[in-house]
Image (cartoon, rainbow, N blue to C red; front, side):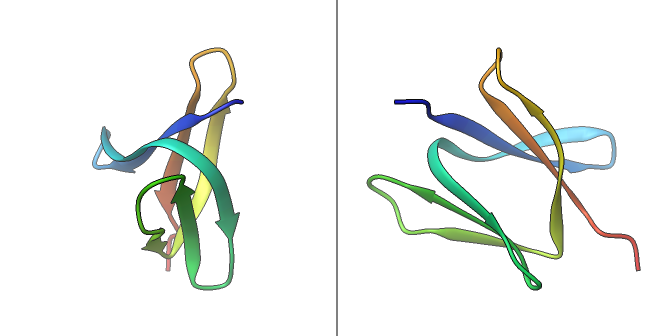
Length: 65
């Protein structure tokens, strides 16, 4: 099974949102990240900036108004 760590890029820094993510769904409201054992977390207004499959990371960023 492939699990990823999800980060949110804020002011040129990357803040860890969740480890061991099993599902990431982008909707009109933002990005919802799900793991096996924790409640899903939604990052309002977020979009996927980068996925690094080798490092197992997803970088989210917030949309510009």
